[in-house]
Length: 456
Image 1 (cartoon, rainbow, N blue to C red):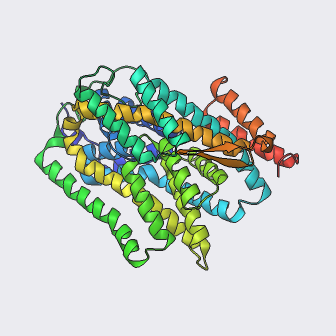
Image 2 (image 1 turned 180 degrees about the horizontal axis):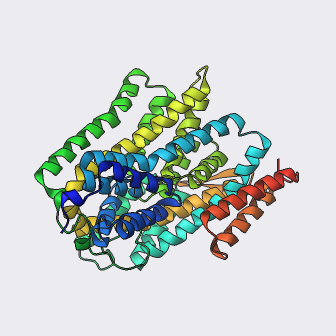
Image 3 (image 1 turned 30 degrees about the horizontal axis):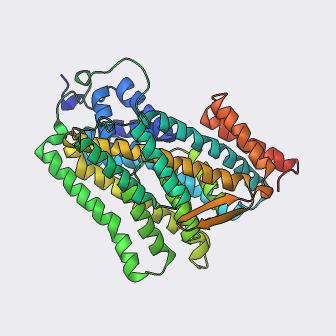
C-alpha cells in the first residue's frame, strides 16, 4: 500500500511532464501512447484501468483529449498545481514551435526554398489525414448504424455545407436516444486504446484503487479552479467584444471560443469547420496555407489543434492594419491559443471530481460513440477538401438548390503535387513508414523539385 510520502515531489513530476511534452509527436494516439508508456508502464503512477477510465472521461469533453488527459492525471497526482503544470507543459513546446514557424512563414513564406518545403509537406499531410480516416473508421464503424451516421455526416458537410456543430449535436442526440431505447447498435465506450503489453493493475500503482478524486476537499478545490479558468477564458473575449467589436481580435476571440466548446472528435474533425470558416467566411487564410499550418502542427510536439495558433496569427497579421503586422500576428496567435486551451482546464477542474459518474452513464457513452462515427465522415470530407486544393490549381463552386460543393477544374491539375501526394499515400499505406519519415521525405522532395525547376 502506497502513502503520500511515496508520491513523487512536484519538482520530480514536472521533469516527467516535461519529458512527455518533448515526446508528444504523432497526434493524440501517439501522445496517449507516450503517456501510457511513461506514466503506467515505467513510473507506475496509475494502472491500466484508471488510465483508460480517465481517457474515456476526456473523450466526453470538447477539446484535445491528450492534453486534457495530462491535465487530469496531473490533478490526480498533485491537485490543481499538478494539473496546471502537466497541462501547461504539454502545450508549451507547440506554442513556441508554431509561433517561431509562423514568423518564418509570414516573413519568408514566398521565398522559393521555404515555399518548396511546404509544397512537399502538403502532399504528406493529405496522406496523413486519409490515414486518420482509416484509423478512426476501424475503431468507430463497427455496425450498420455507425456507418450510416458516418455516411450521413459526410454528405451533409460535403454536399450541403452543414455546419460542423450541427453535425456533432445531431450525432450525439441519435446516440443518446438509441442508448435510451436499448438499441444494441448504440453501445457505450470509446477511446484510442493503448499499445499491447502486460496489464498494470491499479492496486500495484501509486494512486492505487482509491477514489481520492472524489473527496470533498479535492472537489471544492477543483471547482474553484474551474471557475477561475472560466473567468480567465471569457474575460478577454468579453473585453474585446465591448471595446473593439469590429476588430480581427474580437473575431478571433469569439470564433475560437466557439470552437473550444464544440471541438468534439479531435483536431482533424475541427479543421473541417476551420477550413469552412477561417478560409471561406473570414478570409484569414488561403486553402493551401491551411495545409501548411497543419504540416507545421504535424511536425512539432504538442496537440495538432495547435494549428489554430497559426490560423489566428495569419488572420491578425493580414487584417489588423497595424504598422507592426508581426506583433499583430503574435497577439492574434496567442489569443487563439488562450481561448482554445483555457476552457480545457475549466472542463477538467469542474468535471474531474464526477468522472466515475459520467463514465458509468451508458447514454452519454453512446452519444460519444455516435459522435466519433460522425467524425469519420467529417474527416473524409476534410481529406477530399485537401486533395482538391493540393492537386488542382483552380476550383469551382457548384450550386443547385440546397446542394453546394466545391469541384476541381480538371484541366488545372498540378501534376507535381498530385504525384507527390500519390507517393506519400504509397509510403503511408503500403510501406507503413512513420509520420516523421514521410513528412521529412516529402519536404525534401518538394525542395528537390524546386531546385530542378519543376515547381515555382
